[in-house]
Amino acid sequence: MKRCIALIGGGLAAQRCAEALRRGGGEQPIVLVCAEHHRPYSRPPLSKELLLAGERAEDAAYFKLPAWYHDHEIELRPGVRATGLDLRERAVLLSDGRRIRADQVLIATGAQPRTLPQLAGRTNVSSLYTIADAHALRRAIIGGGALAIIGAGFIGQEVAAAARSLGAEVTIVDFAAAPMASLLGERLGSWFADFHRGHGVRLLLGRTIAAAIGDRAIRALELSDGTVIRCDHVLVAIGVRASIDWLQGTGLPGLGALAGAIPTDDRGATSIPGVFAAGDAAAPFDALLGRHVPCAHWEAAGRLGAGAGRAMLGLQSGAAPASSFWSDQYRTRFQYIGHAPLADSLEIDGDLDAPSFAAIFRRAGTPVAALLAGRPQQLPAMRRLIASGV
Amino acid sequence: MGYVPVIDENACAGHAVCDAIAPEIFEVEEVARVIGSGPDELILEAAQGCPSVAIRVLDDSGRQVFP
Image (cartoon, rainbow over all chains, first blue to last red; front, top):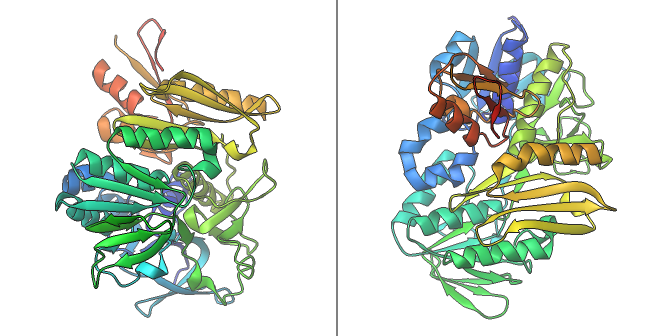
């Protein structure tokens, strides 16, 4: 049998890799293995449009129509998981018992939401990572009642914004003193807390979950300070971990210490020739920080997937600009670029109430990151500012 | 006559919002390409919707209308 390129994962990184391979003139057979029963789709709408509009928004989440894969001779294997990688035989083992012999492999199996052991097995606790999760969460929200969100990161905040827009009663609980304080610092984190309070969200910060009250379904959460919050549904949004357990024991370097994701270079190449990784499963080397950093965000995942596709064909990629990250909440677009934790000072310019402002993070006077609120047109200038500063 | 969209390929991250808003004008594979033309408002809407702000819009005299 003719050997092929195996793309393991049905998300952005695998999709962009497939596109790059075909655009770059690659003619090898491509097999794209998706664990979910869907063709590749984009995850950002899950915490935004899919919650607000439900199944009507689902079509827009798919990258391509089914015909695209047929036309580009890409064999889709939906509903199939990779269970192992045989580096000596160059074969990917699959959950349906089949094997794919491949010259080149992209590991793009994404991540899975972190869970809380004390809430395990309850019927009204969920996470948000897949289309199925999004539909289930929307049903819980529009079913009425109180939604408790554990974790005040961007996903928790976006779900809070969508749920408020749908009329739900929302409480966010986070152990930090301010939302995203470890990334943005307490001053901006506190601004986000006030922003959500202004939209009717209850935020309980600096607290953890002590106990879940109720039998099969949780009826209330008791927090570490004794506060009890009533809830009809609980969303756990405390981050993700790379879905790379299936690679344990394969001999792929970098997994022993479990850095959290597979270390790669800036083209997604691992230390094994022909084996690439991209997306949430990968941690490309960050020249600025001098270490491997989990890919984590959408733009970075797409670029790394495309870069891996070109590298498989022996093609070069241009230097990527700093990736930006965006979040939509209550009709305000937030955009973040750079590395805010490097900063020693923060300057905020604009109107905090509108909101329409630019928060610029500097280290020794040099811009290292920016957060824009309601000012998308300022992103190109910020990107230049940060690129010139580094 | 009319607005002309220009893609900054370095800034484009392939979000494909433009492709969703105006598929006759934009096509996204890896990065966006301009494949056609259309009404000014549609071009502007696509540019404003781009999370990476990778679409510049010029008017027929070459003046930048967005961003």
